[in-house]
Length: 248
Image (cartoon, rainbow, N blue to C red; front, side, top):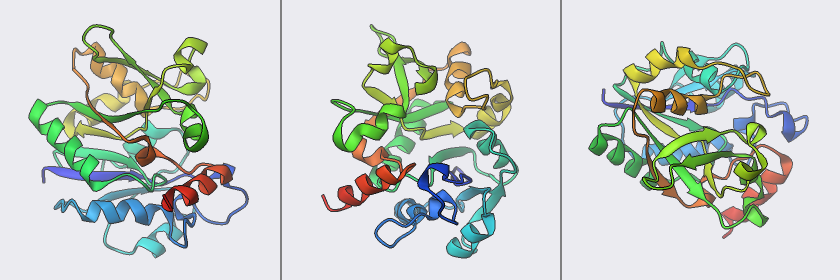
């Protein structure tokens, strides 16, 4: 199998209030968040079943989604790299695309183009980015996304800095990392173990895989997409913004 999607869906959604469901089952216009993205994946027609990484109340996720997917279990919430590691034994494809189950607006066309870029370049790591005019209005929540650091002349990506670890000047950067990557599977499984948790949150960030790639001389190929596509739902306020975005 050439490609497989891995959807990170283990979060509790602690900022969504006291809702008794995993964050990806939060209802947006009477439909669970994760079903929006799964609907887009169906348009791509990949042969391998997507891997859903579950954690908090994992049985509810399975009950809602059914048996059409492969399930992996993240036993502790130790960060996005740890979540991907949980999928290692279940993913079977030569390349994997990592997505978040709480991003309801990502489009199949963008993912198809990411896959094309990845194969055309022969890349070990490719990713989506997005740029805003400002962190206001609909895109206020994107202010808390990681920042893309580029080399001034080549414009190659030379770093990704999480918001909580960013300097004041880095926080002013308007190109953000939504955390959607495509990896050569053998490469990422080998290099996940190089990620450390020496950051403010003491978590294993998948963003740090970019640093590993750069240190190895790999070029990170990227595709910039509409910021609306990368709106995530992490808070009650984000949910209200998403509801408005659906009507636009």
